[in-house]
Length: 148
Length: 158
Image (tube, each protein chain N blue to C red):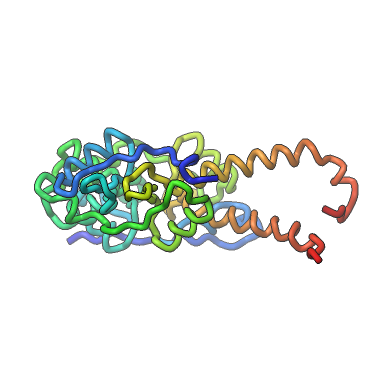
């Protein structure tokens, strides 16, 4: 299953010299926690709502004059269109990021995959499997240690 | 400068409590008073590495405030960072008792559309925060164990 099929949140781009205030507005408007920072269409960073809080508000800086490039995570981990679920999980685990941009071969962002997307997808699959178990294999309850 | 308080969430490990969420409640919750300025709450979030603080008025929990709440309040609503953090904890928090059973806690999260719950003891005192993020590893481990029961019984391929 390629990650593009489970990526639900819109990928919202912002320029490196846009302000933290503009970033906050985009995050509110699109109901997202992270934006991809692009230059000439190419991914150069990720900026999150947490970045605004810990790098601007906590430091007493002005949101309207602090540039996104100053608070973003540069050269972020990314996934490709054809990346699979396990690869996405491993990339999130090693980068400790809860959302990763998906990019094409030109480093143009095409989507965003978050831990929530993974959780929702895997939870739905397990729940569906659970329903199949509860309906289709009654005979197993009668026989102890039935072979698989 | 005001400091937040941190409380340990651990519950007594009796047979009853093993079924409840008390052992899953985050061991440390950063609590702040309602009058703490937003900027200071943000500094504590940064230094403690947490995404959320509990706003507590004495024994009374007023709500949870997340890093997202702060970013949007300051960046979109023009709230000054000097404003007391209580203004961001406007809604009554979704709370559960530490004796709550895990399935009920999950159902509460789903019903209320939240990924964190404030957890209180029987007197209403905040003892911790239960986050969906903490439940995923737990449930994942249980499912992995269940998977082992299948894997172990499989004959090895020749």
